[in-house]
Image 1 (cartoon, rainbow over the protein chains, first blue to last red):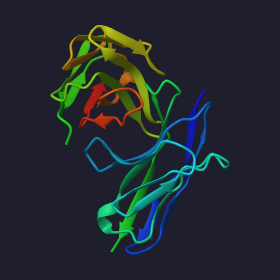
Image 2: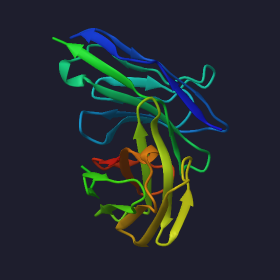
Image 3: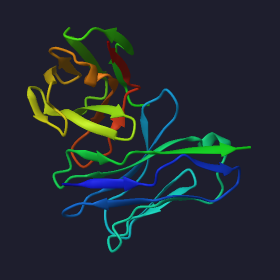
Image 4: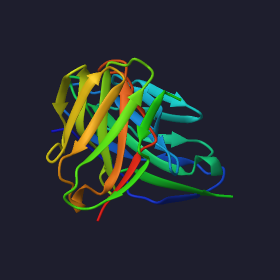
Length: 112
Length: 112
């Protein structure tokens, strides 16, 4: 079946540092890929998505590129802020598009 | 924010009692989902619905049942709660399959 593997956290960075959170996946067919963010006490919010190979999703300074050859969808941001502190989840759809499989989540802590 | 309301937001109950969680949406989306979130597991799909009275199982459906008698409401029932079902439960909606899911704020359920 499908699976998503994320780097374990917490990831602790200073403000304005460069962020990479690794995500690799195993899937049949051509899934869509997503990054969701969860702030404390809240539900998940869609951060960005990519629907086919070589697509780049971007939002709020975050980017991720759908790499089919390496089955990866790494999240990057050039300069993090304290307000980016949250838990980040990588996810993919099944072939029917009616189920999401999530990674275990990576907690990001940004210090002033 | 997507119009999703989960109730109750917090519940503490005893082993063996029945529990029903409600998800209400005002977006008229076709798909609704129930997930549970546990440390280290990300979110795992319990059940989902693709229309009124149309439901299907997810990854971790044992011990749970669902019902959808109206487009706007999706109920999750634990017939006889067990301590292993202590978790945070999230409802999500999407306009159709292969579309991004939008999440409610969650229900924290503790079973003693």
